[in-house]
Length: 261
Length: 284
Image (cartoon, rainbow over all chains, first blue to last red; front, side, top):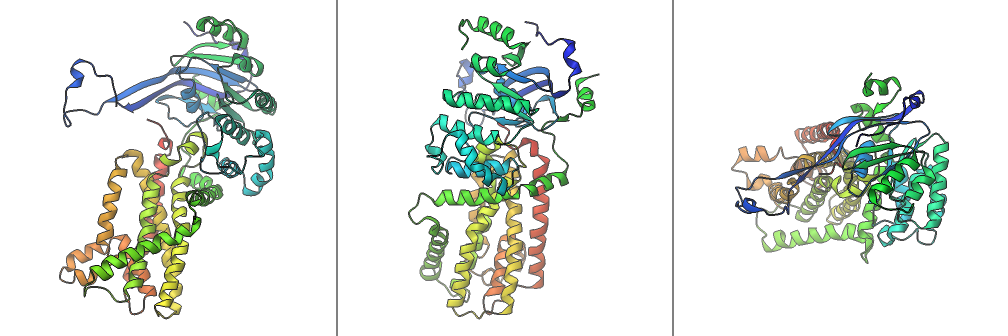
């Protein structure tokens, strides 16, 4: 499959993120590998440390322009999250580079801040880490709590929250600031419908304030509702890049689903 | 025109590129509130599930001091026991707890906060620094207990006690340095975490916590000279010399040694930590 890319016309707009031939390789110390044939032999000292390499992202190149909201789709394990972590600078690229006009912020699914602390304290910490001053964040606590809809539970430790509740809180913390570039990695998948509507509205608002948003999602509906451009990744490679309707249709054909969500 | 040039002409910068050392320090300083808050919250969270809560911050070292006092003072007591044994022991145990805690806590500070590291970008050096601050917060009530014990045991309060403050400050700098160093080392050698407990056991028994190095090694001056370079015993001896009546160990040479460790180690560790900034938190 040859990648279809946008036409040259787009290059008159200002680029905000350039991904240049990004490769991500994870080196994992091999434990629990399947035993086949001769591999079962080898004593305590004769065994070499087996490092397994997983080539998660294999040379992806694309340019994002001002005002784009990019949807990222692909099967599980296709390298979407790895690529997003690479763009945010949280995972080191093996080769290639990501250029951006501001540091991208990633809002991921597994990221519990500090499970032993109350929601309110997590708001404080998250805000301070994002660079707010203590006073600024104190004035925002109420608004963040209200956005997450957690007024009743904000004093409880985060470990007691359901996955939907903590996802809502994380999004609310991240969305309390205007990010120049925000990456949302399936973080909204566990939220309920009411929260999804709220967060989609907030994403549109951020985009209008000249922010660029990446949205990784398996819900074609939220991709079509919010994105202006969609990138489809499969097995670490870029399959298709372009108009949301075209790309999602091709993806649906590929996966064999005929509904939109 | 390749993409790198294209990005440069449009004012885009490479993501994840390590900032220059001094901008890095500046950025870390700008977010110092984060390090403080993280330390105090982590401390509270650790004690929140216990009924006695934060009293454990004083109870744990007091129990530890009492235990060593019982074993080495009463059961194994000998003529080698230094004067003012209770104060001598408390000083050793409390300060050692801080120094050990800074290193051990620092070693896991980046890996143990994976949630933060994975979701937010901030200068990673704040994590080992916060680990050291956490130890400092624990140390304060212990120091209060130490001073109280000194007064109760009849040591006169003199102007010399004011030197206690710079001595502790140097020790805290050293602790912060060792915390960053530990975090830096575990990036490359994760096996280190398995060795640390043994190393500290060795240091604990060789630093003269509950006996006097000078008395035990009176016939082995060469070994004594080497052991005295050990920063752990140096800080403990310094504080003993300042506070305990009749203890003359706080010599100008010892001050120099403590100042050297306390200034050079943090600078060196900070630099070493910064060098691998891009690798901190990378999954493997």
